[in-house]
Length: 143
Image 1 (tube, rainbow, N blue to C red):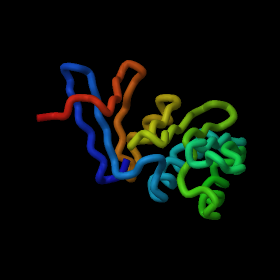
Image 2 (cartoon, rainbow, N blue to C red):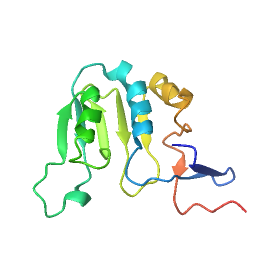
Image 3 (cartoon, rainbow, N blue to C red):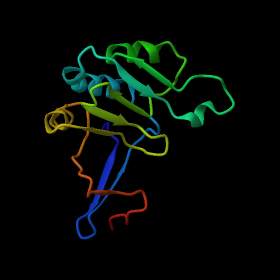
Image 4 (cartoon, helix red, strand yellow):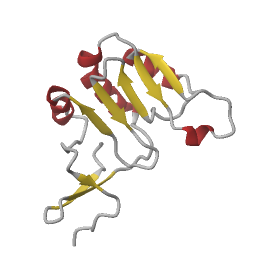
């Protein structure tokens, strides 16, 4: 989602291959931009944040939390969790963010208005996909 991400398309096969510099999360700048886009939709309602259990195998750290979007940055700045949540969404389900630890990109889902906010943000490098769009790390590379 930042300037070093690359997107390849194969229009004949309907494939999109996206790769970026960071696995399993958003940089501080990207996080700030995504929060700015989501804030008008989520407001001050509670949101749920679920971290990947992979990083916490054999620990007693909890992996799910509830708080507001504004509390997420402070929570992460305290240093107990060194990456953004794998999944997060407001209680009213007005959107969802997924930064899977195996992916090199983040998916933001929501209304067309929310998606337009992501697409139009100057910090985020984004493309719109639908459930029919194949996003596949094994997609053929361009020649």
